[in-house]
Image (cartoon, rainbow, N blue to C red; front, side, top):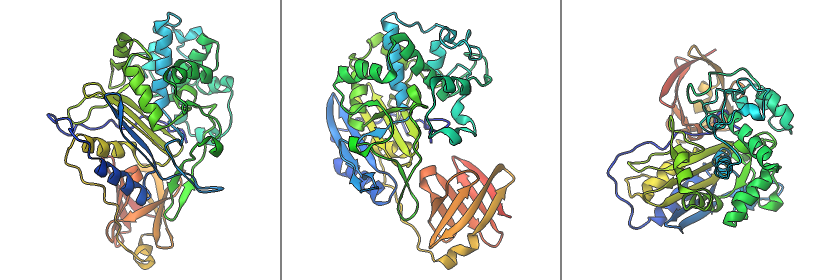
Length: 440
């Protein structure tokens, strides 16, 4: 599924005053990726570049599980979701540099049928300050996301009432960058795929970055998966006619690192243009997010599409680029927190995914359908062998890992559930919020 919001939480500020690592602890980085793979949490590819040189690259896990099991390699290609927005913004700014496009141009130039089209500018699309509703937030989205859509059909879907007046505030909307992709095509009179190839892939001699189509194992493309408790379960595949400039690019961590290095070395845009892109409002610039970490400043983007995850970040002062691509839903933020902590020699303990051993008899008292007065979603708790499963209204089932006889977690979503069998309740904790659920 192409998520309602493709940006993840920025890397939190741990503390200031840290020093740059003198020697990269590669064995610890290896241990982190090995732990994630062995615990069925994350598979994918990680690349670190410093001063223009690759200092770490590793790929783990599988690219495909059917019809044959295909291990992932350095050449495996992944959908990168909203990291595509950084690429689209770069294409837009190249056209601005060439005088072919103006940031203050109203989108009515191309899309007069959209609400507020005469008021919304190209720059407001880039900054997510247009007020246009994000079509991926609609309940109907999951009904058509796997089916092809024409540009005319997409424009009809995006013509929903605006959420606020242009420029009034920041609100992340996939509609903004789908429209920017269309504008690139209209200005250049070429399909997005060709523009991407000519203006970025060819310039940087990239072989693994292109506009995606239906996933093809013969092209070394990975499918996406989630662990269902016993095996990797394939995830639905968004038709790439839908996300366009907001999320349809395929790449890998090596190519993404080269794109960011190209951006910061002046190969893609001028230094003055890059400064414009970095100038953020509410943490978001022209296709670049501010991503602070431990007193260090970085810029980049995160991406989610289907079961894929991606993260790309550049630290200008340290001349460090970190690129990550994955075909599993374990949070990119958690992976990069570990990677950067290790790189900057900060205290970091490898994640512990050990689980308590419980029998079906231990788990059966928790089975039931639960509801909360604090949210409309209901959660059905079931038993599959010796694994407790949970399924929220309208969502897929996911396995719960027991940390004790009453506490269960689902790390992929940062979720914790504490059961009280006597009271027939559980407390759900996620993202700092607490909800009480009672069995019906």
